[in-house]
View (cartoon, rainbow over the protein chains, first blue to last red):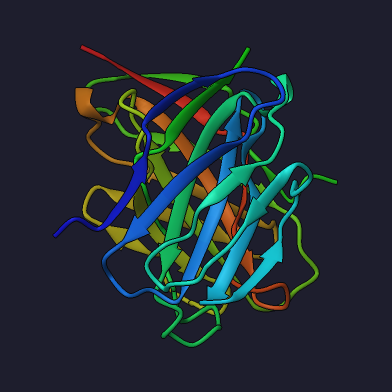
Length: 119
Length: 115
């Protein structure tokens, strides 16, 4: 039971390069999310997806691109990496099957994270 | 305004004692959910407990309980009988039904359990 995995776990790149972070889940969850974690900010939502081919922006989408051609995969691409994108990136998923109400938890489960350093 | 506020950047507790981690939230939505996650030094995010805005009883999960005071807009996490393995960063998060399924996180509280 692999759950939700991210690759690579660590990545060092240079300013201006394109980088793609991978996220894969085996639960067939409808919803997938990308967050970044920076000191003092907790986690902030970058993009999310409700289903294959449906994506939407979160709080901090600038400089990032996502796609979701298959339910199980949700790659995040930094088209031209900048130093401000040095961060820990978390992918998460939720089933989306419980009612969207406070009685339905629709808990998000997180991947192990990718630590990205942009030099 | 911050949607989720965790005012304790760091806390210490003696092993076997109870500890309360504070979380206040701000929303105009009547329907929302509150979550707590634990992040140990290894970095993964672990779901602990959930409270819905219409739940009349405080949520409990083993040694974790959520002290939910709706009028005060607070959702404090209580850990009973602290263990050394409880040392971690703890995040409070909210989902507002009007907005969708994404979570808004607080900045976290670093808990250290002392032997």
